[in-house]
Length: 285
Ligand code: SF4
Image 1 (tube, rainbow, N blue to C red):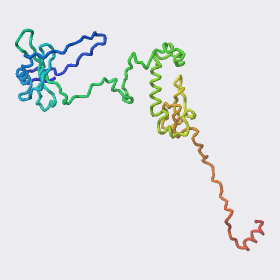
Image 2: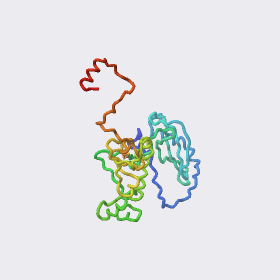
Image 3: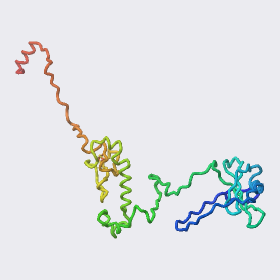
């Protein structure tokens, strides 16, 4: 809203158009013709803009557009440095069969070069994994497609786990769509097969003793890593993920093993003859 120096009230600068209902019938609209009298009322429009703006803040005429029958909007450059790229829009109109042109509206509008804030995005679309902090509550929509009432998800292709949910457990469980979505996200993520650590792993998680399969149909593809030395300890990993901490990767040598003795069969020691006789007399050889 822009406040006029001459009037205490503000001026509405921009009003968002109401979204058109898809059910509403569409009507053909013809392009309005520019009314000559309204088009000639440049001075009237300029004077109105100057009255609304601070003195000397209205620049040259930048054109006009017909908004309807006998309704024309004139545009003037805005010279206020705080509104660089904006322009004054003064709408004038003339009644049917009347000669007098009157001012309907005078507003400050952003032009193409105006600095504008980015498009507003609803918070639900801005939310990213990891945004939820301690104490935060994230409501789940009643019609969230990832969830479905447990009693509706009992066909043959559905988790047997859901049968247990029938009237006994949670009000809602993962729907088929929600299951596909999470499986894709996990598989394409850092615990899937296409990560550097999985590519260099000696064997996949499916053959690892630390791999704990999930319950339900997701067990066909995912489990939880239970190796505290693995980077994915406590996380869901795909069956074809892997890491260097695989249970069968290397058999570590026992800590009490000694190195085998080294026997030098080519070298010898020179011993004095007397010492040798003494050794034999004592029974040594
Ligand atoms: S230790 Fe490595 S290979 Fe074994 S389950 Fe965990 S991530 Fe998979």
